[in-house]
Length: 477
Figure (cartoon, rainbow, N blue to C red):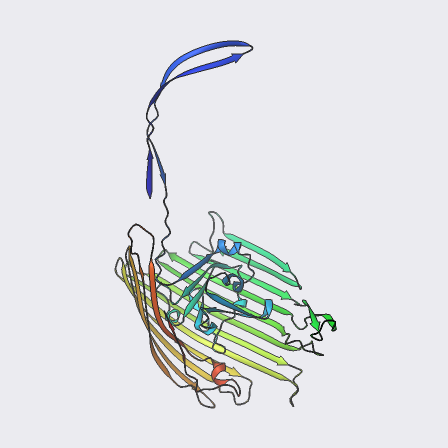
């Protein structure tokens, strides 16, 4: 806060007034003294401080509105240093990669709990809408927030999606918001958001959306490379997509130091796979169906200034079905179905030793299983235990953060052998310096050694899977 003081001193002056009324003039001489007291003008002097030790980018809800984005994948394209791959337009798979490390090295968090897909190892951002998103944040390396589940320490970068928490104006108990979007190629996208205050401590929210598009966009098909060769105008076929998403949340705000939230999520999609356009064959009948549902809960309690506790739990179920009715093999068609389940539990403790020094301990355990309708499928099961110990020190000129993540993996398969067990210790250290006291200029550095396990598809997929694959290591400077 800077204060600027403007002092105005008493001034003595003679005023000569000349007035005219109905062609009559009269000169009046007066001598008066005016006293004006001292005036103090105050204003807030703001300097933006960037104390984070690793690159951090944030989009608030107001900023997201200005982006004119339809999905989360459209918004994250505006982050620096990311690559968003789009496999097939509005209904296709969309993944994010930080600094070209690959989508499997980038974790995606949803309300403080990471999303997982052991089958592919990557998260489809097309499943999430911006209608109920309050904030998007992207951390390269690791966030300075040391009080989080151990899984957030186990990746090369983190995209965190924070959804809306019900807020009510004085005297209001219900919030309703609806939207309808439409566009080219048959795009229809209605959505509805409902928030209700149950009592002073309890609130509930529900939102859902449906999207449909035929995707029949036009293109020119050329039948040769020379000038004058024949060409024709065609439309893409088998490009339709229909998706439905629904979420229900229950929020308990017992005090400023104790909160609890429960969320249930459901998503399903049906889409055509257009395939490549070749001579004499412009039609594909391959189809893909996806379903995903999860229930997650998070509880946070601040006992006092020094001790804070947080726990999270989640159950996740995924289903994917692929159909190719025009397969030219002896079976005449291909129909594959895959099922995933996950059970996850996490606990974290934060201890503030001093006002500017704190430590945290987080431990996560999860069980992942996968099943399929394929002959001789391995039916793998992965048991994971992650423990992270982290510390952080902050003062006016220095921010220092460090952590160590211990990963223990036990894996088994019913057929064909498993990928075995893994143990690894992953260090991380970062610092931000302010060399000049009066200038907001900082130098930051960080180092991280992390790895990612092969996905179930990498290890056990049909004839191409290889259960001898080793984890993929990544070092960031």
